[in-house]
Figure 1 (tube, rainbow, N blue to C red):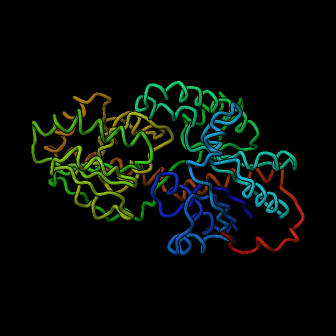
Figure 2 (figure 1 turned 45 degrees about the horizontal axis):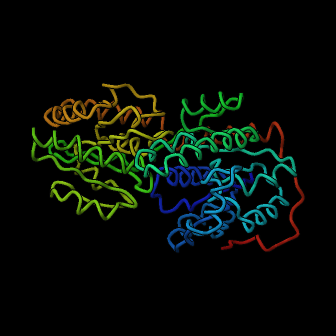
Figure 3 (figure 1 turned 30 degrees about the vertical axis):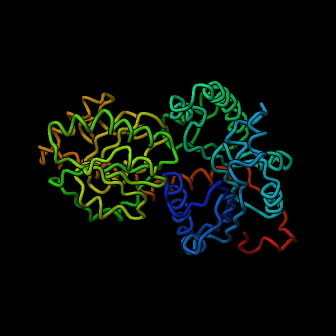
Length: 415
């Protein structure tokens, strides 16, 4: 199939779960012979490394600049009732809209839009031509404001509540227009069904299981590993909760325990706020395997967020026993006590970590069960097959037909 795929960010490097999902699905579909044109609006231009990673997978890579976050247009748009703030920041882009309209002159078997918040530049053209499309939603965005609400100044909280209300209306508007809607978890799919009255298709988050196959963690290392993207409030809140309420209790029982904090956008202020040498401020790592080999437990004290957690799946694929919360395994059909240990209570999490570090046999049980679960149900090849089925259903119901464009300006990679 010829696929026109849009993204509001470059999917390389894979600094977040969303980027990792996009890269691996693009790679898997390219390996299956599909011809993909990737239209990206990005706040940073593509590096040579990004081009080398992406261009071999694609028929074309088209990268257009996104205006700065603090642009006056974004400030003005935030006051407009019609669009929620995130849709405005990623929309109201005439250059992107015009490029998309030119691309629609070509023949596409599938048009795939990622994220409802990126939809604004494409809405008018799709409506005018009556073209069916796939909308892939990675989380229920109207609920995402929960993660940062309590962290905001009091004077900003009413605006955050107002913006979440706007997003609920925006979600209904966008998801209702899509011929096929993709969700990443059964709970998100059910939420979308209730919102729109139409079923959503499940395309799971996954793992490159072969990449982590040879990892064997170190039960005696006493190192806990946390991985997140610190551009998101959920990861910020998780680390703060761990260091304020959970780790102090663990250290009372076992002073040798260490915590490695890994991820993109690590706040510099944390190093001076928490100076304990048992905290390892690692930052972003493109390859986690060496650190996974020298860690005992993957610890994910997440209290906010939706979708499903790719970093948790990667830890399970690497054989790391997981201690987390209910949100940490949201979207994953795993069993407490069989595939992971968890609680939403700080005291209980501290106790679980302390006990587990003294039970290597229990760590092996959790490791083996979780690794088997991921191998059986969450390899990226499974996700790619699910997405192919969505694409095939779209083309069977209403193939997209258009005359090839006479404009050759977009026949090659553009910035």
